[in-house]
Image (cartoon, rainbow, N blue to C red):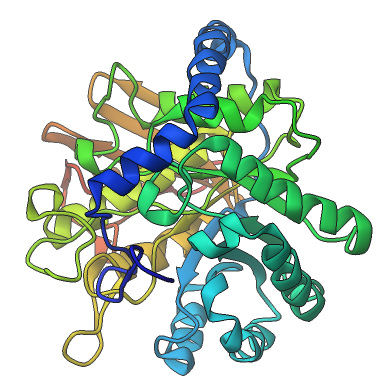
Length: 419
């Protein structure tokens, strides 16, 4: 990554671009594309909103719905042990195009994960955005080395943030077109995910899904963060997480550019008092208890939607936002145990229904021929612990109290002898 772009090793993202004149100049060069983004969204978003209620949910494969993001250079041996402990069957690994010399190290890591389904997120720098021949050459090397070890390649990331190297959607379209043409010519078995828009900025997404470029996504990748709004149930312009997912799935369903598959390849909440490792300011950060609760409810709502094929948590080991705090040794945050128990209960589940009354939610699923209800409430509530109940906290602790406190931390309630 070359100036004025620079990578922040603390928060695992590029630093903000401080040269305003440079950003203004680059955006001016891309004015035509930015105009297309505006008019595409002006047409596509209203149609998607109208059709959103008519999009049916899919039967989501529970075993591969839960995905964990990892850094292959950060405690690789420990990472493998933790992945086994979590029980996840899908893993997302990031790779920087400006660090091609580390490709063999990446291959060695992935080769130890062959019992997992691997998604490789290929992250761009400005050099590869501008030099498409360089991009083609390096993608050919990556595909040749890894295409039989990786299930899906996510081409590009965070395309609507200038610090990541793109200044317009058309720059990304040309970037993905290069990958797609290479796939068709030399690697027809490779599956490519595209779009890569971060946050609820679907005007950019619309332009990636509706354009005149001759490419096709094998699925859409979205970095659907909702952390700036607090809890996943909180709304932004009238859209909570469930509504954001439904609108995005509608756009994917309508698009001629993509298979009907949606993968959330990044989401998390930054954690308080972890600067400089937190990827945002302290204002957006949450305490570890809220982090665990928000994470679990995000997964439950996405799973219940029937619109998302997988959700990748970003990420396993990261001081400012991960399940593991590695600042002073290795400490498993409570969210680690919450994630582990979630996967244990739901990786073989069959979703039945979700019911929400005001701020009280019940998700129902069949798990090993048992009825599982997951209860949570954004306002304190109580429930009698029946003799037929077997109740666990979000971390997996058995609860035998006569009266159950239903709170923002979901409870797992198995009903004995229920079909």
